[in-house]
Length: 440
Image (tube, rainbow, N blue to C red; front, side, top):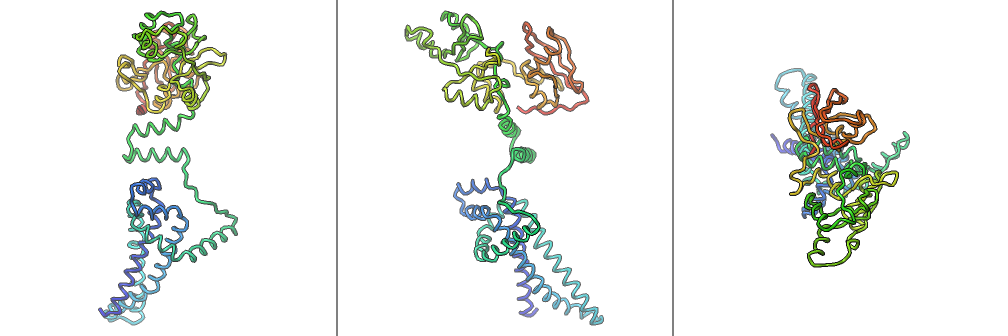
């Protein structure tokens, strides 16, 4: 092979490489995650700094990639096809066929060969590689692409302007590229990340809980009035010690004459007992702290801010009539995001949802009907908030062992009743239904 032919083949190889480079650049900068580049920049990765500049000006970067692809493809068609055809013509002539057939076969073989190399090596291979190794390729191509964009910036700018003018002629208005994701898009991204193993089930559950946090209200997380543990302003220190010993809480609402609709505030048991040990004779009223008020329909986020501003760990939830509906604590709010929080004093406390056997669950009567739908796909249309409320709506004097049918042929069995309060029920899932996995 003579030197001119070798040089031509080297030029062809260079043009194919440039095509592959620009194709890889185009797909990798679209696929790469901006948040990951931000992390690499903070870690001091110099290549990531260039990559960040490319991503921040992605319109110009994509135009530069297209410009480079077009130039290299035109060069490959102009120089490559002609040189390859000349070389193949020499080989085909040795077949002793007619000159016209030699010309046709040389052109056809050269065309097919160039097309194959251009499509496979120049387009498909770098595209596939860029999609699967977006971060590595972005870091590799960012600096050269940035320099190329700067060199040919006037041409790229002019081409972009002409493209926008053409779009306007057809009534298409161009706007700045939208880089933010909606809540639904983020949910889809997180679900796909979980399926691919990038995040675990707990992390997915936390994110889903955070998204639903804004929709939660105080009524969803509060301790109901019937379950509130209170002390009375007239209780003796011995009676208060007995209550604290039994329940092991730190803070207790204080009532007047045992009336939960007349809550004076709350006391901190540690503060009260410390004063007793130090022989502090301050009156009991001086240990009562003001308790912030929220309504049943106050968003949890607003209730949390109210507690933070008041520097307290709890607030009183009132109903539409001004009576006490329940008690809301910071722990209750956190459990809406991270799930149930149990400490050393909760070891005897039964979880709200416990799997007893396959398709058999023990549920607290306080489990929300919304949670029943989210975890098991069982939708209760009655205007009630809790499982216990559903049972009482079906039968006000429900007793242990009574059964109630749910949509989908699922069944609730009352397992524990305290006076008229449904403490626990058993959920039996229909055998023909596949239960949804619990999101702890």
